Length: 113
Image (cartoon, rainbow, N blue to C red):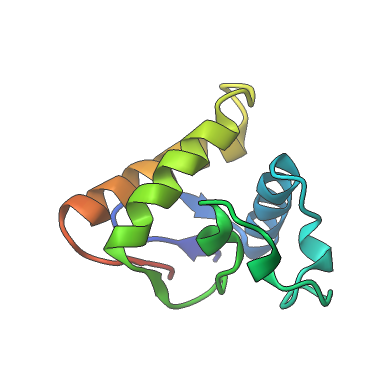
């Protein structure tokens, strides 16, 4: 059991996805645990970064619209670029970015399952 997505083979456990998003947030100078919805009181609107729709998203349902997928995918690839190539989170992040690009091309939302 865990988190899967349409359009790609990315897969995380729920706790693993939370840790992954904490690492992404740290890349943009954010402590995810300080944010609204994650135990803190800082609104996501305080940050202007293309990765925000992935960080400020339910980890078990809903979707990301196709127009947003393209910008999130581009930013996701930038943020994990220097992570070790054999790092599981980087591998999954690249799968997720590819899935987002495919969802955008097909004009379909990327669904979290």
